[in-house]
Image 1 (tube, helix red, strand yellow):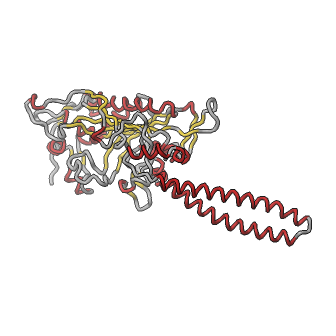
Image 2 (cartoon, helix red, strand yellow):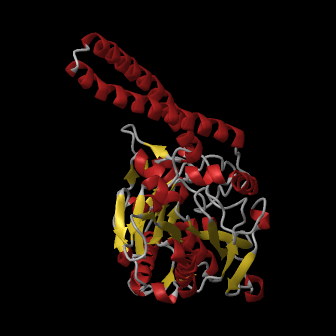
Image 3 (cartoon, helix red, strand yellow):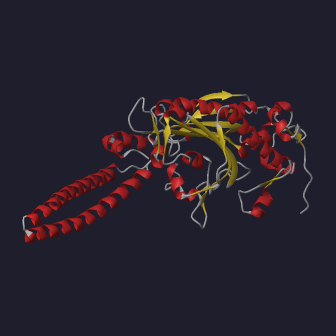
Length: 434
């Protein structure tokens, strides 16, 4: 959430930033609410001062035998209390309107974020690896939504039978590959300084508001009858672990990682990536989250991108890194890099990780601060960062497609062989009877 004082003092900059983000910003409405709030505060303070002065005089009047005058003053104090209740209610109403307005306003893009309208304006930063030339190898590459069922390791029909469309079932080597990828990713991150966590797959509204999924993106969330939500990413839980806390500066930066199932309604994505396991309602993901000082935030973002790249490089999957422009960065982000893995079925690169620095935007919502007595008094908001390390289903799809062989089998990436119990090739599984 943006700071109220910052918005008040930088209205032109906020308006320009929101325009670059293709976000709606009603500066006139903000100014109107802000003026009403300040006027209500001034009125409250004046009434409170008058009440305090009058209350002190009552005792003096009684001591001087001026009972009638004291009673009149008491009446005025009672009237002031009623006025304060009215003014206080008005201020609370304006405060809530301002709060909702700021809760629905995205973060300010960092100066290093390229200005652009949409994903077509995202500049490429670098590439790694070379996509296979299957034609030169003498066979046609199949998409994972054909290969998986042929090998009987992915079952889309049974996923629909058990739930609905955009769910799937993994069996045999498919389930083993999912588990192998999760363990491999977590081992890589913990070896690079991340602390592993196991967190709930459901969160309350306060937690989701802290990371800005609420109130803006409620339609994308699955909600239980008890008022809890299924999490769309472990970022929600890992970032809120320190909500309403003050961290000691010497403990920063904090590196956290976790595997969780993730759930998304995919509202507004009708017709997009309907085949395969790229865009589904439930998926596995290993997440990275960092807490840093403002001075180290963007340097830590570069390191986080390297941590995600490390996974892809060890799996020997070709990918590219792009810098998201102002019109494409996420709601909470000030700067984002996307990692896109090569998928032969699209003959293109597809997002597999998104790493973002959210500055103090989430920390302000979740009230996460740090103290550094040697450098400043009191406490300040931390910077939070998050990144996929990686989306497991998309990684599996990339492995199936990039490691397919002419006979329809799939070579297991070398680094995953120990996690697959020594299996080096995924061959067809026994077919389940109908």
